[in-house]
Length: 119
Image 1 (tube, helix red, strand yellow):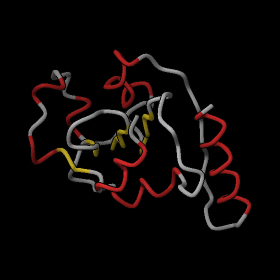
Image 2 (tube, one colour):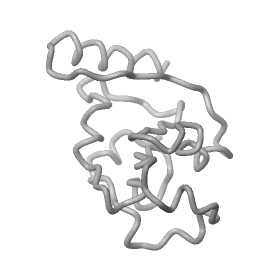
Image 3 (cartoon, one colour):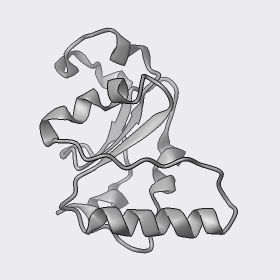
C-alpha cells in the first residue's frame, strides 16, 4: 500500500533527525484534489499522491518540498496529476476561482524523474 511506503520513508527521515515535521495522511477522492489547500486551512504545503502509484522506497516525500516556491500555487508532472505539491498559502486558492483559471506562471513542474513513479 502506497500510504505505508510513504509513511516508512517519513519515519526513516524523521528518525535520522534531519527534519522536524508533522505529517498527516488523509484519504481524498480524485475529484477533490484541488480542494486540498482549503482542507489544509490555506496554510503550509500539502502533497497529493495517487494511491495507485508504485512509490519507490528510495524516495522520500520530503524531496517534493525542495521544489516548492512561494510564487507558484502548485507543482506537478506536466501531463498527469498523480503527484501534486500544493502551496496552500498562494492567493489563488483563496480567490474561489476554478482550477482552469490558474495561470501557467502559477504552476511549477516537477522534475522528470518523478515520471518513474507514475502508473
